[in-house]
Length: 103
Image 1: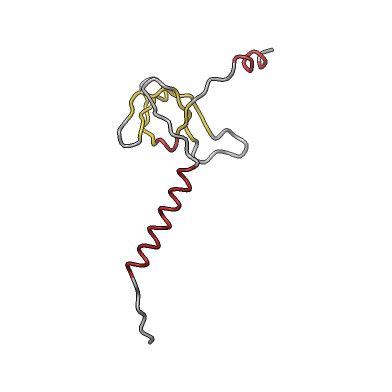
Image 2: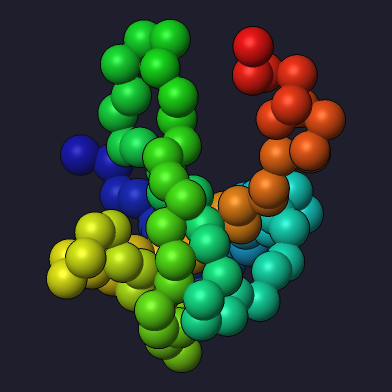
């Protein structure tokens, strides 16, 4: 057996540097948005069927929590608490798109 010397602090520093670099890369692509009660959002579908929409909604926000979650009302009396990473703000379609879609 060959003795192996392990430098644990150096390994931990390299791992932490990798985690920090990954977070910077992911956060550089993220848009910051402050959600408010009454605002409507779209919810990410975890595993969509092929060729279906990845987002469903819009749902109104009923409560904003300080830990990065919001509570939204799915139907009357049914609400769901969900993380901010799984929602995005709902943008109303342009009026010209609405009139062009109707026969």
